[in-house]
Structures are given as C-alpha cells and as structure tokens.
Image (cartoon, rainbow, N blue to C red):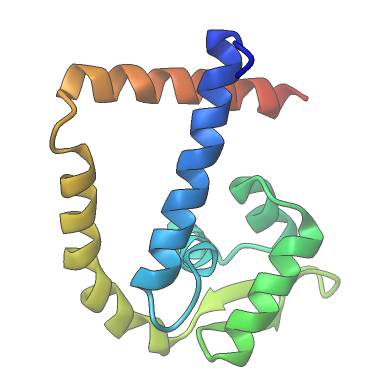
Length: 144
C-alpha cells in the first residue's frame, strides 16, 4: 500500500470517522437520520429568531439545496414549520414544532452516554488538542 503524508492520513481518518458517526446516528435515531437530527439541533441553536434557509445552510456548512431538501423532509414529518419573515416576505423562517420537545428528552441522555463512551479512553488534553486542530481546519474553509 502506498505511503501517504500524515496530513493525508489525518483527513482520511476524519472522513472515515464522519461516515461511521453518520451510520451510527442513522441507527440510533428512529424518527430521522443523523443529518436531520443535526439540522434540528442547529435550528434550536438560533435563539434570537428562527433562521432562514440561507442562515441555516451557512451555519451548517451545507449547500442551500441540501438544506432545503432536509428541511422539506422534516417539515413533512411534522418536526419543522415554515413561515414567511414578517419583515421580508421573500425570506422563509424555519421553526421547530412541538413535536420536537419529547425528542430532546428521549435522546438527550442516550446521546450523552454515547458521547461519554466514545471519548472514555481519550485523555481530556488529547480531546482538547484534537478539537483545536479541527477548529483550525474549519477556519480554512470559512475563508474560502
């Protein structure tokens, strides 16, 4: 097998881990995919006002089209509602519905237990260092 640089191997491992996390999440949540859960968490994170599709896509680092498809699926399932922006009718605001409330309770403890198990054997300083590296890599893409 061809030898690659540590940087190449690092990115390969990030992609592999991303796929494994997504597959695990898809089996973990019964109501939606891991990416859809991720989207719901982002919508919940907008505290001042419900996000627009563009704001949500930018925050998640995904395309407008991909975000629109996920929002549409979650709206059909009753987890999101869409409404026109009162100040600019061209914009659509995205809000969580009441159907999401029991899900936070259902998954919060299970999710926390899974995260703790995942990081159990990794010392906190290594976790913090890995986080710092990932944040720096993300900044590269924020500039481009």
